[in-house]
Image 1: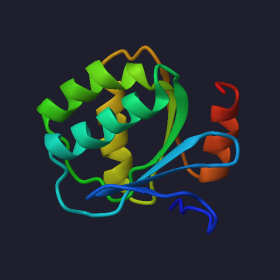
Image 2: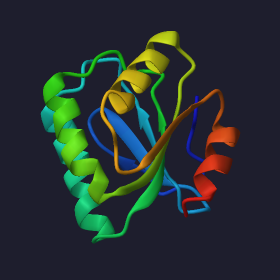
Image 3: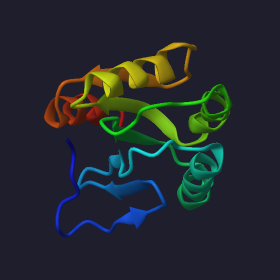
Image 4: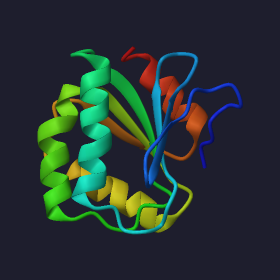
Length: 131
């Protein structure tokens, strides 16, 4: 659903790709339908905790290829994402992705804003108020 611009500096992990858009929004996309494991999530989360050095960013995440998330991953994200996220907007072109995004971020109260969107433009517009 979302795609990096041709001139974006891509940050690529085994199952995820990231880039910063021209507004400074961190865009994230799962690039594999394979199950994500805790090791994968820790790898990119620790990378951004280090890279951002205490700064928090707005995040746009495309959940279209997400099919499952373990309790272990959800617990880790609950503890670690507050170190990097001020707001997370979610988009998905698949019903399963929408369901997973809503379950993932809405089961527990988060210290950052979250919202589901139908398209990238609406999501980015909402995220801009958190920049």
